[in-house]
Amino acid sequence: MRTLARLAGPVTALLCVTLIEIPEQPQATAMLGVALWMAIWWISECVPLALTALIPLIAFPLLGITTGKEVTPLYTNSIIFLFIGGFLIAQAMENVGLHKRIALSMLSRLHASPLQLAMGFAAATAFLSMWISNTATAMLMVTIAMPLLNRLMEEHHA
Image (cartoon, rainbow, N blue to C red; front, side, top):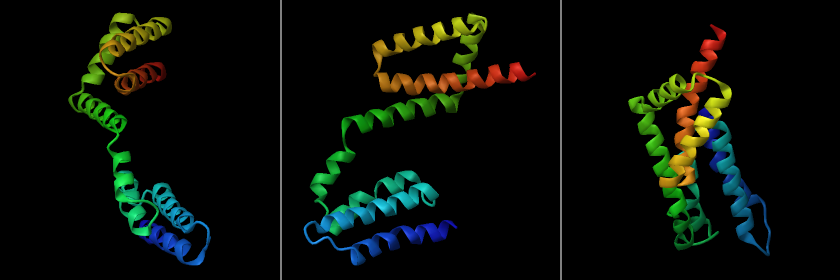
């Protein structure tokens, strides 16, 4: 199935470029082909999503949709690096188990009252937002909230 999807993406793009013709805007058919290629690969997950996201870097200049100079800055936007940094911090917290330690510490101090937990999360989020971006704060708090919710669900079902 994955092999079929790997082939279907570029074949669909090629068919769009060769069979569909819009004389006023030839880039539109190429763009449709690239969009369908990416959609097939995203939906089927036959290749890593990060690799699929790089298709426009190569396909847009090759198909004449736009130049490499216009596409490349979109991948080096500061917001993209903010997300990457936030994901790296969240992954590092997960790898060392810091997110579980923080969640258990909050749980033991707040005595598992739903209101106290919500207030604790709000306070922690507000404190972190003073020092790091809101996006990174949200990513960090999600990594803390997930093990906390898992623990609460385990206790509830036990």
